[in-house]
Length: 601
Image 1 (cartoon, rainbow, N blue to C red):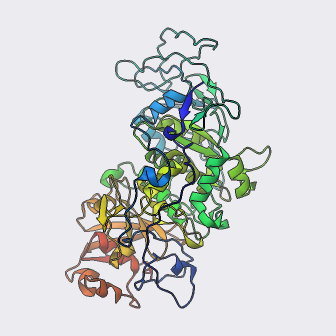
Image 2: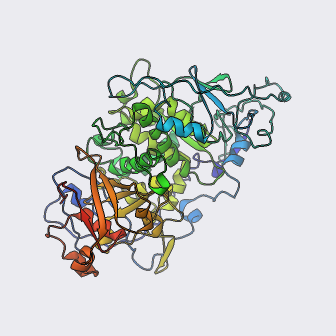
């Protein structure tokens, strides 16, 4: 049995209710008619610019503007009613609260089996599986007949065995598991401990929480991505059959997550009940599909990570596989979700949690109502990036089911991993919800998925304004973000989002989030000419839109319109494609050629 102080746990950390400190914000102007998309624009008292095309798009940008003076924020620990955890977290916490097992593996020879299928470890195997259509055994969703299975990978050498450790008192010794090791020959073996048991109700103090052992992997498996099995299938690690151990999410935590996600609305609109499934059109099979307006920010953030996974040399702008097989789609989705979830941890040695719906015999999880989902959600503890990927593979059909809860399950997983109070602490206005008016994504939600932090702003670092700290992006990002609101001088996007590690950007334009990506490293370096590719998950495109970007001797829209706030406001009513304005926030003074596609106005 292990006792874990509540304040140091990843997500069983909901502080006692306290009065939130809300920073005053400028009042917004009124509109003649109450268009839901226009109401999702930032709450400002100045004129907002909004033009949309024929598609029913959605999205919002909120809490990105300076707050009124004279409202200094109290320390986070005081405002949230809890003591901030010390430097020991993540794996140290997991070691303190969970029973552990011995792990070992020969050098470069990880072997993971799913329901009888195995795959070798290492970066080479991962790349081969990603780009040679043989990484998964899941039945392809919504794609007709499945492609022919790939040839089985070479068998891994038999793992070297060390003497079995002495068992803990009153517990049977646990067989060793395979784990990636150092060149010297693997991780040191650890004795198996008796699993902790949850205390009876009322046991202990209110400052402690007793947990059962809930991890099925506590070590880093390197870069092996394994293969996918059916939802709920068993997982074989090092020849030992095991299943991810589910733990119910305490209802106090579940309700805190519900309040943080949906706020006063109490739950998501029906449009948020969808999974992560792919376009069936040739040339667009890399793209996720959005069925209704609302969760565009979530889908665009996941789409951006998928594009990174589908490029063999994404950092330098390698060619994107725009027609992946069903297996490649699934492998890319698993890696994308894993990357997002792993980046949300509060410390480098912290763990992650994957949320799964309650099981229903003979029924699909999509049959659950939102309230049934919240009341019955469970989690699986994952001590490594590869453990996250393993759990997601085993439950991928749940996350991909078109009418399912995949989008919501990802958000719940992110909140458990980051911690409810930490997410609120990231935000400028602690009482806000992550979903905005009319069911649109807030900037905090998009930032959480793109950068791992639910900050309210898109500038670099922190800015002090009249005694108030405005928190922005504090680290380099794998994928970036560009927004039409920078063109209108409402905000300034920092270099960490403008110059991401990979040439992929989430785009906020016309109250909708989409993606831009490049196959040329010059786009990240900022040196046109190059081509950008545009994909809108909601627009029902027939093909990806190629935009050729080149220097404009006339200075582009930046020179023709002007650079002041007033000048940019004059763009309203002119036939200027908003996407071109967004592009010029990153590459000013360029000309955009739509290559025969109709410009989006």
